[in-house]
Image (tube, rainbow, N blue to C red):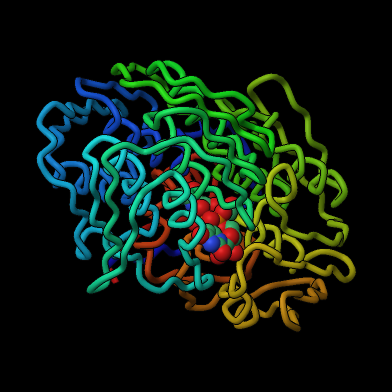
Length: 417
Ligand code: EPU
């Protein structure tokens, strides 16, 4: 496995182009299973998680061609309804095949995703929703087994506004007979992106982006050719990089309207943030102001930005309280940031961050994608070198991260461990 080495102390300046959104691409690629034909997806980020979903779709019988950032998926030859443990364990989002396989093939057998570093992450709401749509659900030998000759529309209340749960149920409901109403649905931009694609395939969906999504089932869907929306978390990560290094980064090809909470918080820290329809320019400051942050479902501050924001607060003037309300164990980065000299105390789901004047480079590692990103950011302002191990996690979600940072003036390199 590789490691990334960052030498701190450089101001980051220049322009960075944002890749397609991992968390939009995963459900959208999966939605190809719902039609019989060839779908084309452009602006797909070339990431480890995308390769994982590709392998899973190929296992199901799809034929896939990848060229640059375009992925063509031919689903005429689907011949499997089982997603095996060896493929699912690589990535929890593999559970997204459950709804589409069931809707298209009338039965699905999908390995239960295993444990996860950031929390228990159950899938009970996915299963409850599918059973309300008329599926018979069983769990045996570590697999979810679902069957339904014909799914039928239903009213489903989600106890928690789960993102992949909403996506799974939308994909099952588009081919159900009758109307499905999802209440307390997740409102993330990735849900709207998926609904847009499903509509282009012929689905009838209303209300996506609000907490009530209505789906009128249709008997079949058509293949599509679509582009993946920009990654709002990659965008936010570069925004923090600029704020943290007293930099001046212009982020292009992004969708600022998806980053309201992050832009607002960053401005409160003293950074200047200028926004157009598809660019964000962040001017950092040497005097970073401490602000409190609470993660919330969209449009609140994203849990996927919490670790990066904590790196910023580690060197701010004053104290910041960071509260994580989405996942029960998403402070994996804290012990590593502390090894770099950060002053952070955790109590339950809150972290008290007392800003320090300097961090110092250290060997660190993390078992979560966004935690790893926060360590790179911390390394940018640490004295000396920070060696970030387990780059595997970064490669799951950030395309060419070290090249993008290097082009902005960072001293960053990748080496075999
Ligand atoms: N939950 C349940 N039961 C369920 C489903 C979820 O209790 O059946 C709980 C979870 O345990 C969690 C909360 O609901 O406490 C929200 O989880 P959600 O289901 O919304 O998360 P997810 O769909 O598994 C997606 C993203 C995550 C992101 C979260 C929250 C994808 C592929 N993943 O996960 O992205 O953190 O939503 O916004 O879309 C990442 O990219 O690094 C990442 C972890």
